[in-house]
Structure formats: C-alpha cells, structure tokens
Length: 292
Image (cartoon, rainbow, N blue to C red; front, side, top):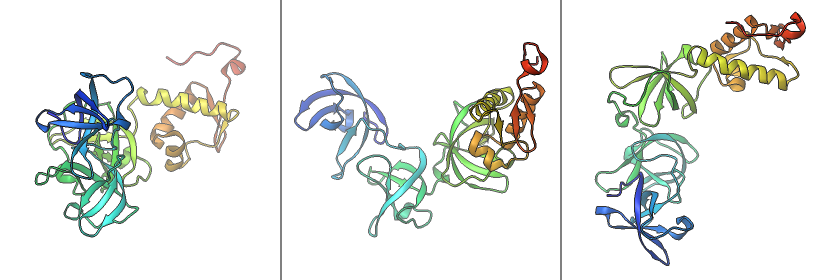
C-alpha cells in the first residue's frame, strides 16, 4: 500500500498520454505525470516516488523530493495566507503545503520562516503542517542514534541551558551554551554531534566532534587557511566566537584546542594578533615529525 506523504517503491502498471500509472495497493492506481517519468521506464519497473494530493485532492506521484515529509519537522517559508483556511508553505513541490489556522501556535505572515511539522490530518486524509511542534516530536527512546554520531539539526529556540534543536527531523535535543560559543537563530540548519542519550527520548548535542576526532581535521583546516593567505591569519585565541564559527565552522573552545595542538607541534607561532605558519625544516634543519 502506498504511504501518503512519504517515499514509496511502486510498480509501473501501464502508460497513458498523461503519464504512467503506478500500483498503489489499497489506494488503487496512482498517476505519475509525464514530466516526472524517468527516461527508459518500462512496464513492471519499480520507481521510488513521493505520494501526495494534487489541487483536486487526487493522489499523485512525483519523483521530486519535498523539503520535509510526513513525520518530520523543518523550517519552511510562508508564501501566502488565505483568510478562510490558513497559510501556505513552500515545501519544494508545485502544490504548497497548508498550515491551517487551528494548527498555528501563533499567527504567521507572508515571508515568515516557521518551524513546521508535517502530518496527515486524520479527518481529511490530507497532508498538512502544524507549528505546534512539541507534541509531535518523537518522545520514545531514540533508536539508531549513538554518541559521536553526526546529525542534522534545526534550532527550535533558546533556553537558560542552551538551544533546543530538532534532530534529524524527528527527535528533540539540547545544545548547551558551553558547546555553542555563538548566537544561533530559530530555524537555523546546521550539523552537530550526539554527545549523550538521555531517558525520555532527549539527546545531548554539540556542534563539534569530540577529542582528536574534532581537533585533527580542524588543524588541517587552519593550515590550509594559512597556506591560502600567504602564511598569516588574523585569527587567534582572542578572536570572537562568532568570527570563528563563521570562518571555521567550530566553537571557540575547539579552535583554541586546535591552535594549541599546532603550537606544540611547532607548526604555528602567535603574532599577537593572529598566527603565522612556521616551517619546521627551516627552523631546525631536520625533517619534522608530529609529536607522538
């Protein structure tokens, strides 16, 4: 049976001038319009398609992928408002996604970007959005997550401890202020790492990998930046967290650890302000080897 609002693997049944029809199980035959039919498609082929409803409420398939699917949450832009039904969001498909008035945590306006959760309305069997996020996030103990795993994050809002974030579109996690080092915006998308899994389905998060997994790639990045800038950079221990995050995509704590590692290896020197590259072979007359 085809799953509304998600990706499906469906068989090709037959072709018509409008497109090809796919087997949708209990949903019957579902049209894949010609503009989405992959070249060379044959009867009995199995295609991966997204199933939703067109402007006339008929089930239709597409090989395009929306920005978010049923059961997921993501930042979406408000493109129009109808005073009779609600707002419409751009989710990457020709037909915009309805955000009914009753599902708005607060009033939205054209041009706003809102954190929306996508679901199937039980009464109408239509795909709709809601900005009442918390009650729709998965609160079961996370399965498939592990400490150190890189994950996609969307910032929900700030708390006294840090920033709440949606993890991989389904679960909630917390980025502690000590692991951020810069101001984040609601709706901001970024990569992070799971640091701990807590009872109740919540995750502790960080914007940086831990230990050498974090420092080693960052030292390489700093050396590459030095090379690109002729051996000198204006960044050092005193640079602002915001500038470090913007230029190196890491926290100030991680940046300082990487600078310390490079300094101990005698790869850089501090120029106050900034840093400069050091050629170890010139300064020692020996082939340089990294510290054990």
